Structures are given as C-alpha cells and as structure tokens.
Image (cartoon, rainbow, N blue to C red; front, side):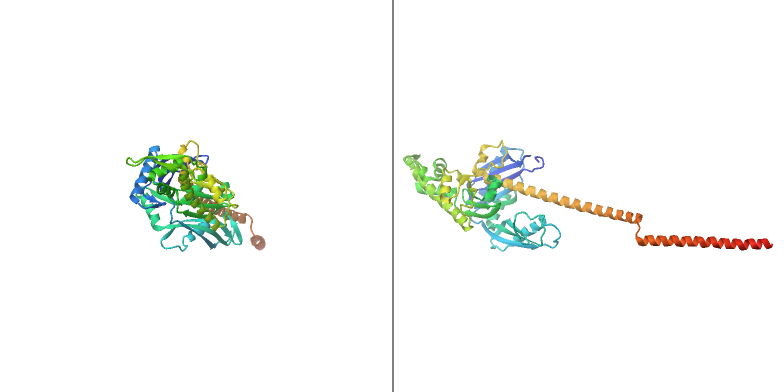
Length: 466
C-alpha cells in the first residue's frame, strides 16, 4: 500500500494563514505527514481572494516552507479548500430510467445520475462546486445508501448541491495556477474539516461541525451518515479581533495577541480584578485593559456566531435532541478558553473540540494536531477518497473486461464441445438416415450377389453344350 499510494497535498487558503500539507497513507491506512509549510495570508478576506498578487506570494511562501521541511517533495497538484460569503447550497431530486433492466445497477448509472445534476438551473453568476448524493431511491424502495448491485428500472436520489460565485472561484484558480500548481479539486472547507475530525460513529449519530476560521464560520450537519446541510456564517476570528481593537482602542496586532493569550469566550469565567498592561504609543502612558471587559467583547461576538448555528439547525429541523454526537468545534477560533461551555449553553447540545488526529499516523509534529489544520488534513483525506474510488472503478472495469473475455472463451469452447458432442451423439433423424443407408447398402449387396450367381449358372450351361 505504501508503495502504491500517491503523495497528496492539501492547500488551505485562509483569511489569516495559508497552509500546505503533504501526506501519504501507510499500510495501516493512517496518514503520514511528509511535508508541512505555512505563511501569513494578506490577500484573502472573509474566505475570498481579493488580492491575487499577495495571495500568490503567500502560497509560494507556504510551498517553500513545505519544501524546506522535506526537500525530496515534488508538488504539482493540490486539493484546495473553498469557503466565503458567496457559498450557497440547495436540495434537488434526480431520476433516471435504465434501458437494460436485466443488468445490475452499476457505478455508471450513479455517475449518470450525478452528472445530470450539473445541469440544474442556478443563477448565471454562480457555478456548481460539488454534487453530493444523500439517499437513493430504486423503484418504490426508499432510503437506500448503496444501490450498486441492486435490480430496478428507475433509480433516483436526493442531492445536496453546493454552489459558489464564478468570479470568486476564478480568483482562487488563478492564484493557485500562477503559483505553479494545478488544482485537482475544490472542496468545501467544512466537509474537509469533518473528514479530519470525525469517525464513522459521528457521521451516524448526528453531528454539527462548526469550523471557526479567520474570516468565516463554516457549518456542516450530518445525520445517519448523510450530509443534511451546509452553511457559511459571515463571521469569524477576524471579527472578534476587530471588535477588541475598536472596543478597547488598541492596535490590531495587540488585539489579536490579547485574544489568544488572555481571551475567554465566557465572561463569567474571567477574573474581575485581572488586568492586561498595553505599552503606550509614542511615549504615551501604558494602558490597563480589564480581562473581564475583554471577555465580554469576545462572548458577544461568539454568541452571535452560535445563534446563527442554532438558526440553521432549526431551519432543517435538527434540534439538540437529534444531535446525539453533539457539536464539534474546530478551526483556529475553537481554541478560545471556555468556548465549549458557551456552546453548550447557547445550543443546548453537548460540545467538544475536534482535533485533526483521528486519521494521523504517529510521528507527526504536535502543531499539526491543532484544530486550525483540520481543513488541510481533511483535504488530503478527500484526495485519498478520490484515489481509492478511481482505483476501485479501474478494478471493476478490469474484472468486467476479463469476465467478458472469459465468457466469450467459454462460449467458443462450448460451441466446439457441442459440435463434438453432436458428432459423437447423432440425432434421431441422423440415426434413421444412417440405418436407411445401411439397409439400402445391404439390399444392393444382396442383389449384386444374386446377379452374379444367375450369370454364373448360364455360363456353366453354355460351357456344357460345347
């Protein structure tokens, strides 16, 4: 497996950072990290590329750092995460009527079903990013998760379609391609994060992934193994930093540092007599910042983000009782102190931090287990999922070709054997014809003998007279 498995690279183009991680699965199915690099992001805001030149520089810097961690790497193709205000989703239903109803439902039928959904009418300014099947229907049977191998005339499915703004997608494509790379696929960031921090039981139990990034908070809801909903909430860690900057009258770098080192998502947990001393500007006296006031600012914005999460859950009828797996918080913003308590208080569901170590092999650096790298690790897992599906399809085609070849060989051998059997085992008509020929031959032989005897008798009489 280790020799066959390719090296896959995930590229996370975020608002605050750009990260590139290269990995390969080992013989145990775990992900070995072969290279890691990151850079500060300047050209991206709220998940959208607004300055292509600065984004290209940041991508190249992240790649250089990745090469520095492993000079033997060769990176040509990447899986890229996508998010931003422009991301939308919709539900559709599609059906096909199969021409060959005697044959089993195959991957070809499913591919046709999915490809038909790319013809769905959407606004002219948007583009379909992904089509995700939810549940299949075969004739009158519903709620089927895997229809391949079944028999049926009509095959249908419910789909979750993710769309994005064409220009926003073009800007990502240009930034990556001008950095000397080819995009293998664009993946919605919360789906990538979900792959990194969730196990099979989470998918089935009912889970909401809340990925708190720098510019946006991404939401993905799973229930009974099905993706039920995705959404992009237009607030993230940058909004909290700006709130601190404006509310306390400090520099943005100071606001970010205070948020990370002294920030609380729950104001009740902050000490009322604790203060942070900020150096004054240009000879001004230092400023005293109350940790309690800092926590109130953070809690106000985080509560707003979580209110959006509750709103989306209610929109799809998923209350806290249906989320048996609770809420999984990931992304850089999930590292705020006491965020779990605030989440449980606001949503009424249990909460935990999602670390991207669910599928990682041992031996990686500790930094990669931070929630901020969940998207990048998930992109590699998405790439492996595509690789394994492609290999499975090739194997199925190989089996079909060989099966067809052997069937023809067997048919040919069967025909030859049948002809040989017929030759050795004549039919009733052939037997009757053969017996008739034998009777005719016997009669002819008898008449020939009689004819010879009569001739001999007359010959003897003539000889006696002479």
